[in-house]
Amino acid sequence: MERSSVRSEFADISRKKGAQDAKSKRANNIIVAVSALVVIVCLGILGVDLYHTYEAKKNHENIKNMYSTAQRTVIEPAQADLQADAPADTAAPQSGADTVEEVVYTPREILPAAQELLAINPDTVGFVSIPDCVYEPVVKGTDNDYYLTHNFYGAQRSCGTCFADYRNIVGDRERSDNIILYAHNQKDGTMFGNLDYYRWDPAYWLKNPFIYFNTNYSEDAYVIISSFVVNSLPESDNGNLFDYNNYINFDEDEGSKYSFAVFAKEITERSHIITGVPFDESDEYITLSTCSTEWDDSRHVIVARKLRDGETTDNFDTTNFAKNPDPKWPAIYYKYHGGSWGGDQSAG
Image (cartoon, rainbow, N blue to C red; front, top):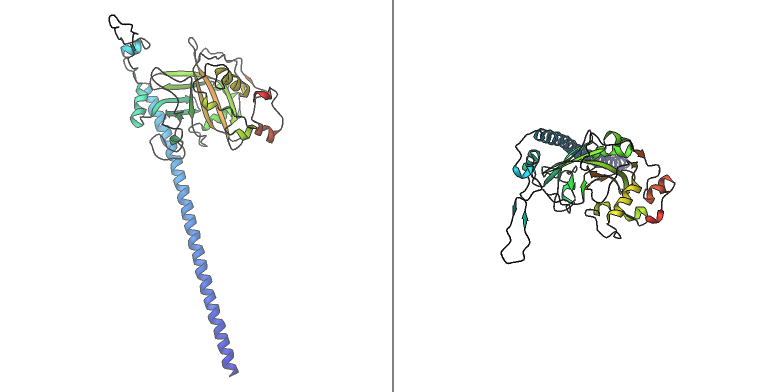
């Protein structure tokens, strides 16, 4: 009887152990399966990211080459282009009535290179380039969100597209005082990824002081007058915010926050470079904006003005360049790096 009891007890132990082993094996199999699934998903995500990176670089090169080739296309200028600023027709005043002559302008011809881009994306408004630094088509949507996540071909991609602020006017004869362009700071150097050169080494300006921004109707050169890093949230600067992106058309009231005087003061005090280039309210401006890495909401901003009559990229004087020894940073910068701005802090 005792032997039978012992055998039964061993049998129970053996069954329990077998059940536990089976459970353990099932658990291990589940863990292995889940781990394998996680690895597959991660590899899939990585593969998609790598493909999108490859695709973005390929698209970048294709568009750059296509645009450069189209730029070399020679066409006979239309008569309207030979007299670009002359009215094509003037409505005759009615007899016996006080009327104002209505000037009707003939639209400018769209440049061949722009035609190539417009055939792909009708939102195209131009092409921006800095030698060895930036080569990007520029679009303008109905908001400032869509092209953050969609490429030039309309596909949803994290690289986005370089785009002008939707409030800007970039027409054949009309334009905003300050055209603002946004693009991601891509690690592969596409979009505005290479603008970091100006941030890392202010003397890079001496190598590349010009921005070339071609609209659909004209090819224009701009000289960079300011490069700075700024906060996009007030809490990073004790409640202060230089919202450079809202200086699209300068207010005529000099007391206004969005007057040219305030704009000029801010971009001068904050700039990491001193160019010695004169600029005033009569000039036309372009601003390039991208994310920076100093803190979470930092933005790297470059401002340039259009070359004036008589100025060329070949004869421009760059001898007055200097590195700004005390640029104005937001308060968060001094929190982490120490020091303070030596200028008028009350100017905010």
